[in-house]
Image (cartoon, rainbow, N blue to C red; front, side, top):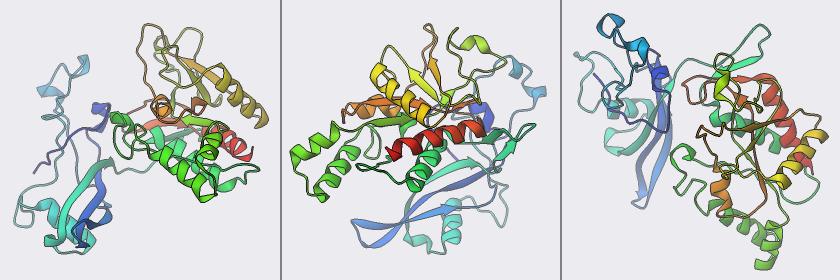
Length: 329
């Protein structure tokens, strides 16, 4: 039996094949009010799916550059149909069993496949972090820990985490919304400030937009700019783009460099090759809603958007130190 799935964002599709996959997400159940159904998180907590490759004997050209069809090639297998595995309502039955609820109470769900194998530290000195979704949960982890572990001297420290960055951010919980602007205004109102006080707070603020960066690939160094080549283990990367794909400018870069110096952390700079279209971040999107000076930074990793990305332990700790120093100001 197969599941019908839809790909999210710009994944490296080949990395999802031949790996045990789990299922997790959110389930919406009947509530006391039709306008307020109940929500429950769910994780099947076992490898339940797999997307098998076609044997090379049947696809001799696969190593010459194979194009995967998302609707045909990327459908996961769940199991063999038999007396104990019925095709009809399979997922509903699994959800009901996991949450210990009645099938009739399940209204809808948002479920996602994920690599079931746990992450690990690898390398001769355990210097590499091998795990999926580092882009961008790594920056969430570093900034959240910095926020929790740091006592600021002045002002209010805020950490904002947005969803749907990989598909344009145009959702109520994405960066292309007024969510952050509204929350900041509500914070000011709760502190007794009026509208003018809110604007004064905005224009006295600074923002770090943090999203992972591309480390130079040792096997394919020509994909990077000839003079700007971020290396894993050499600290946070400041992202720069003349077409404003990043929020960094001379003023905001200078501030972050000062933070790095105060934190005793090395920093690097990244510029895309002029003949290659690079990625972007939610920094420029957020700036269209809230005009706070901002810099785009991130830890350098390899295999971005693979099911299993490769980061560096020292880089992760270094950028955490810069976030902590920023929150101390």
